[in-house]
Length: 152
Image 1 (cartoon, one colour):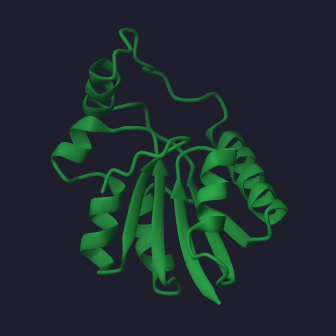
Image 2 (image 1 turned 120 degrees about the horizontal axis):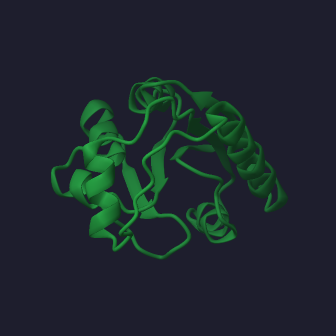
């Protein structure tokens, strides 16, 4: 069975789930989903990303319940993947989601990173996908959540 590690900031959208399910045709796929618990306030780079995307009032505070938010996103993603026939498991990632993804990637055939656009990090190749690719050498697909846009 083909194993995909999915690293995502938020719950997977129906579009993202359909893409993952169809990516390898009729080959049976299982997914392991990682959702980080955001425990730090947004940084200058986060703020620059928000402004670059036209959000003139960027989010500057930490979510009130980061662990609850991440668990809800994980549960929703696992349920959605299961509904379309993808065997799915997952866990919450810690303060270093890339490090957790690198560790989990040892058991995966490929990695899919699903995020909102992060223009500054992508331009500097410091986004999650670039960092996981550098650390593992595994195939990494980076897509913008809910769209057909492939970043790398």
